[in-house]
Image (cartoon, rainbow, N blue to C red; front, side):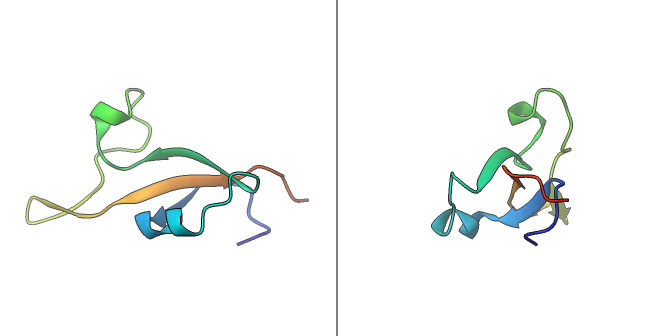
Length: 64
C-alpha cells in the first residue's frame, strides 16, 4: 500500500515492476546465510521444502 511505511514482503515477481526511485529492497527470506543479522528468518517451508521466496521492500518516502 502506498500509505504504509513499514517493511513489506512481496513476491519475487515484484522485480518486473520495481522502481528504485520509489522502493528500497532491504532483504529477502532466502535464509540466514544471506541475512547475517538473522532478522528475517529462514523463509517459508512446507514439508521441509522452501515454498515462497519473498523480497522485503519499503517505500523511500515516508507518508504521514
